[in-house]
Each structure stands twice: as C-alpha cells, then as structure tokens.
Length: 185
Image 1 (cartoon, rainbow, N blue to C red):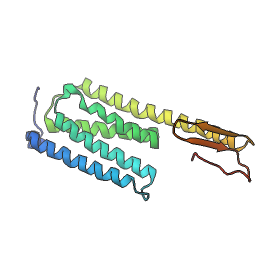
Image 2: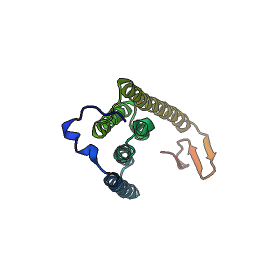
Image 3: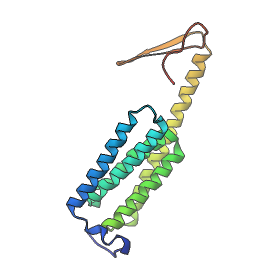
Image 4: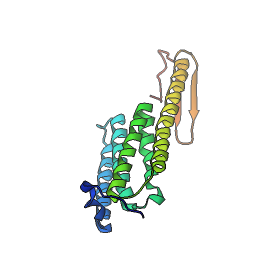
C-alpha cells in the first residue's frame, strides 16, 4: 500500500491495532443488534425505522471498511445498500444525500487509513453511489405511481381483485359500503 502525507488529526487513528478495530466492529454490531430489536416494537414508525436502519448500516459499513483496510478489495461499495434503502423509502433526493454521506465516509476512511486513492477512484465511487441513489429512487417513484393508479382503478370499480401469493392472500376490493377493504396500505 502506498502512503502519502499524513493529516495530523488522523495520524494516531491509522495506528489502530487489529484487535482494537475488531472491538470497534463488535461495538457497532452490538448497536445494530439493539436497533434491530427496537424495530420489533410497535412504537417505531416505518419511515423512522428505515432511516435508523440506514444510519446503522452506514456506521457498521464504515467500521467494516476500517477493518478491511485494503482499497483494492473495494469494501466501500457496500455503502450502496443503505443508499438504496434511503432512496427506496424517501426518494431520489434522499438517495443522493445517502450517496454524499457514503462519499464522506469513504473519504474519512481513506484519510484515517492513510491510503492513496486517485481521482479516478473517487470519481468511480461517486458515480456509482449517485446512480444507485437516483436509480433506486426513480424506480421506487414509478412503482408508487403505478400502485396509486391501480388503487384508483380498483377503488372506483365494483369488481375486486385477489392475489393468491405463496404465503398470503391479498384482496383489493372496490369501495362498496357492504364490502370491507382487505390488505394493502
């Protein structure tokens, strides 16, 4: 691994031992575990839970990139998972904000580990993160639009639609006073 000039605030962090890095990872994993158990409680709303999960994944993956400490392995590409989660739940803007956060974490790991990553390395990761955030956000918006069109058609009709999946029965019934609406949002 090539080394360059050290940045004074990060000089001592690059000397972390493998045991200390493993302890940091265990601590992050323990935090993610506590967070996931909190997700099971009813008082946590879905959107807040997705945001919390994405933040926890960013933290866990940052620890992972510090543990791997080899840019040729490209551990930073795993940031695409929380970027996709944010884009899926909150849209394109949140996906792009997630991409910026991933680039900030990647840059921090490069500085902490004193790695030499060239402009092409930064540019390719930035483009991959941005396209992941924007692409998933756009696809999620199209899916929501399609779902809204199907719902409006079903709610205005006197017919119903039932989907018999492998694990559950989902029924969408038109708005009729004598028939309850089952399934869906």
